[in-house]
Amino acid sequence: MSDPRELYQQVIIEHNKKPRNFGDLEPCTHQAHGLNPLCGDDIVLKLVVEDGLVKDIRFQGHGCAISKASSSLMTVNVKGRTQAEAEVLVEQFRAMIRGTLDVEHQAHDLGRLTLFSGVKDLPSRVKCAVLPWATLHSALHGEDTTSTE
Image (cartoon, rainbow, N blue to C red; front, side, top):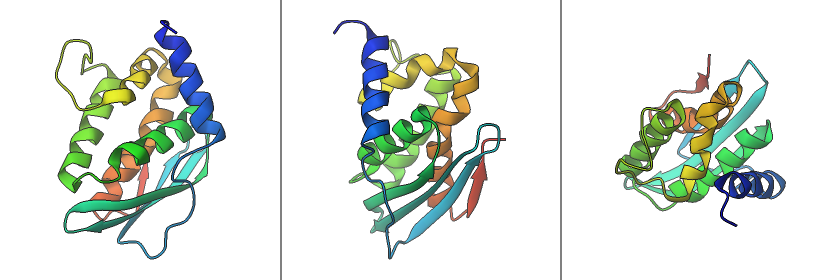
């Protein structure tokens, strides 16, 4: 499989059908509600952070395939990282999606998350992909809610 768009589509489909870290997490130390009023994507993100380390993270809610896959891959990539490392991923993911980080030529820690780099060319989907990351940022900063508007 050499076409990155084909791999992107397969990963989106796979994580939409079988999202990782989907479900409730109680007790938790951090949580936030994220909403994309434009399309109705709606997630609740809960984390257990101990000694600055994300020990566990889960999400619930509903949304489009891109939002759900982005949430799923985010949880996989954030679990086990420090809070500071998670914040770096949030900023790099947002920059990639907005087209200010060129993942081909600039240093980053996104790894497989670069599959979402093509979303920057789909303006109607940018907020869908960013919603879980904005929600993670809010949760880590003690903000109860976030919106992509």
